[in-house]
Length: 78
Length: 259
Image (tube, rainbow over all chains, first blue to last red):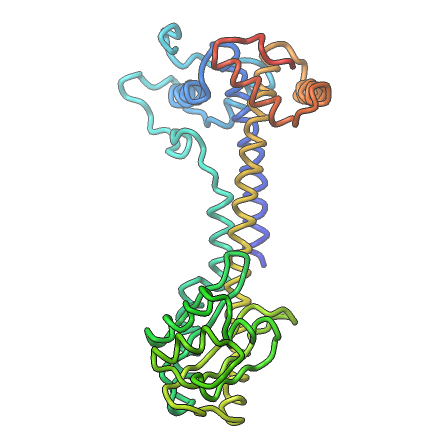
């Protein structure tokens, strides 16, 4: 039973992160005219360069509208 | 504050973050949970044990099998002999025979001589050509519901009597328990599929919410309110509105969607 409850909690959290990441993708899609995959890649690259987790960056983007630059030349992201 | 890693030497990022896009873990988790109950393989092996027991404890039996009836149709499992499989297939094909009657009536059915039995004329004639002469079929009941039948076939006429009926009743109980378990497994798989679909709907709506946030919506709630209002105006689901909004975006036409 312990395992089932733990699993349920993990799933619940995973679902919340998932929605935040999708929202962040939507923001980037609209802002930079990207596809969903391109938007996710932008998040992943920013994650790599800032050494922060994708879900943390996504949450920050949704709350503040800001994403740390993933690259010194953001122009070639499209 | 830490220095950013040089671009040509990226610090190993969390690997799960770079697997794009995040996988749907829900389905796997639920299937895993169902697997903890009883795997399909376990059920099959146990069913085979039961039909083998049925075949060997009723003397003169050619073979045994279980007929399963559910939303996917009628089929045989754990057949202990090829002729059993054929005789069963004929029942499903002709839609008549002792096991289908046992399943429908929830009562034990016995045929003492297929060459003279008149209850299932087409099936009797077909299986007597296969060499089957007598049959005993017990209904499988799970919580009062009939889920199939377990049968033994013999090449000898009048091979089965009250003793075999008792044995079959006991073994049918075991098979019913096993099958009821395997049905809860497929039930879990169905649930997992539904959840995966629901997750897809959530994703579409969350993306559209993000788009509206980028367009100036002040909060997630406000953005969702826009979607809900647009859905009501156009008599569409929120999911449809969300998908149209995102699709118009990637199609390069940002003004097509009404949200």
